Length: 598
Image 1: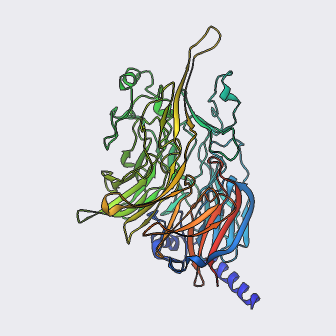
Image 2 (image 1 turned 60 degrees about the vertical axis):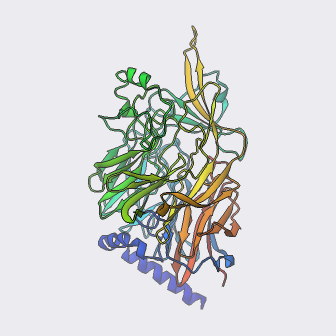
Image 3 (image 1 turned 180 degrees about the vertical axis):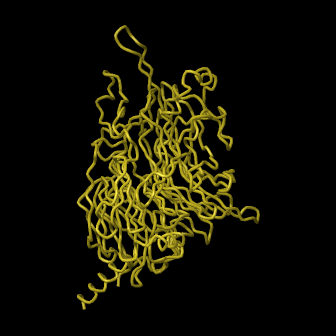
């Protein structure tokens, strides 16, 4: 019987591989991904990024019987943020440092493995990768050393390998603390240096991806083990380049279009005193305008990393992408103006990359409030009228909802984390602010349930102290100026929040967790919401009340987005358990896959 079942699995896997290379078939499958409950075909299941599954075998009544069905250990113990892709019985998984494996999704048996060889040891943003894209007989991955690679879906062999930037390594890592500064002794875990860690998205023959690492600043490790990052430091200075999103030919790797995060004209914007939604910004606009001529070419090094896998509206032909903080990070002396299009949600033409509209959440950002969580598409119901909308869980602590046709703000939610001294300038004595450097919501993807209009957000309460350091020049030493965000001692926690989009962002319920939440959320038709915690707990919550119904400890931090799929009538839930160095969560190397006990 075992031999027959094993042979049947092999036949099914080979059949899946045989059909994978049909481009027309794959385009249709991706367009209809929301109607395919058995698979998880793209990063957030479908182009809308809703991360909602109609599967309900595992539900609020049966979840107590959920238990591990198989565990895959990769042997690479490091920050693990990947969201698996499941296509016709095969799981495709990116590991830290950009290794990729294909697994039998029924058993966890490894079918093939790609070992990535980096072209540089420098990594701006750590070894984590958030996932692959699978289509046209290929598996696509962006790498920490700024490559876009296509692997053969059957074998894992490299089909093509292209550079995202042409001058990797030039002019990078130039941020420097003064020689006598006590912070100089601390270990740097992040700096300028281009890479890619987002999961790419494939749409109509194009692979769309962006680069990170252009913020010009340092991340300093904590001096305590298993603690969050110690500080984020911003300098007045010049990075090598600005960020971008780009589309590549899925068959050949040829670059089709590129959208620059900072425009060559109009980069300064309107010198806004408030955000678009009216929050006051603590800016020295007079000084900015006085220095505008001196820094007229600041757009060339303007920052704007791309952290988030875009959403796609096939009907409108638009790609919705988030842009990170301006460069230099936090320190604003050399970048007057609003610093467009940083800290913005942008809508791009899917065929050409042309900008259709932008919504800048924080003009002239000085707080590292990147648009980091992937945007999610849904229909908003406002006064009885259905409006095509795009939502984004922000680092500011609000869930912004825009009309996805023109970028008009429809509303922002109630704050899903505490807010204090938001948009305040640093002082010598320091300003305690919340959300802090990690943001209210980090890169964690949200989940949206169209049946109820609820958006589920993983939040962070981790206040930081914002200071400026000024040391006058002497006869032998130049002046020193930099800003710093340090995690402050005191309570830190997470929030899992249900935001009612049909009530203009009212919070329906909220659960407080022991640790800040980073990793992502999955909602299902079984009235369940799944998310993980840094202490290793992976939990299921009732979608209507927030009641915790089930928990399993995975042994390492669960700081990756969970997925679910179905094979042979069995529903599985899968999540990576490998922790997060930047948050001080225990690291590991496992993917744990659950099903109901037989």
